[in-house]
Amino acid sequence: MPMRSLLFVPGDRPDRMAKAATTGADALILDLEDAVSLERKPHARKAIAAFLAEPCGCARLVRVNPLDSGLFEADLAAIMPASPDGLVLPKAEGAASVARLPEGVPILPIATETPAAIFQLGSYAAAADRLLGLTWGAEDLPAAIGAATSRETDGRLTPPYELVRSLTLFGAHAAGVAAIETVFPDFRDLDALAAYAARGRRDGFTGMMAIHPAQVPVINTAFTPSEAEFDHARRVVAAFEANPGAGVLALDGKMIDAPHLKAARRVLGLN
Image (tube, rainbow, N blue to C red; front, side, top):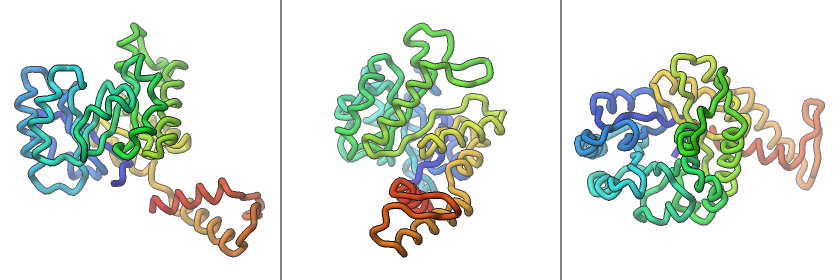
């Protein structure tokens, strides 16, 4: 499934679910974890199951509660009969966590929310056939280690969390699955979001999570190649097809080789 934009929706707000499906998001993340208080979780499970039973124009994932929360089993009992398109697993700690989930449903682990999780990012390749992708978070980990924040005053990530971001990116690509950028918390600053999302795509992320409907079109634009990019990719592919066996060619006054061809094919595959 395409996953440029993944929009969080509180699981106890059924009034927001149908609206979220009209935002253009590639996927909704119906949240049973942080967005829902403990006393509201039974209501949220029923609301999500009811929404999953209705037709929808986008993928619907459910963020369940962590494996060891004491709530996970009730989450699965309520939502699995309604056949979600995937599960988002918070507090995941590598392939071993994925193995504890039911077979037959794709998993998107949030792979960096505990200190131990950081050392398991390379293990997801062993569970690649069960993954929708790999994503990360910059909020729970600072709390887990007693850090004041993961961001500078201008919104940039501090060095420890830049490292975590990079390790998630490479962990996803090592597993051959989608690398999904974390949320941008200031939902009012769409210009800053556009810059952040563009940086994510530049660095190799293929999509991004959103916390507000207004963020969706910005993210979709950032993770969709432009017509100029498509045109350049077509010409790179055509140049190599016209010169079979060539290792290096010239195009627009620049040298292109196998990595450029691979990148061009990836762009065309996104069309």
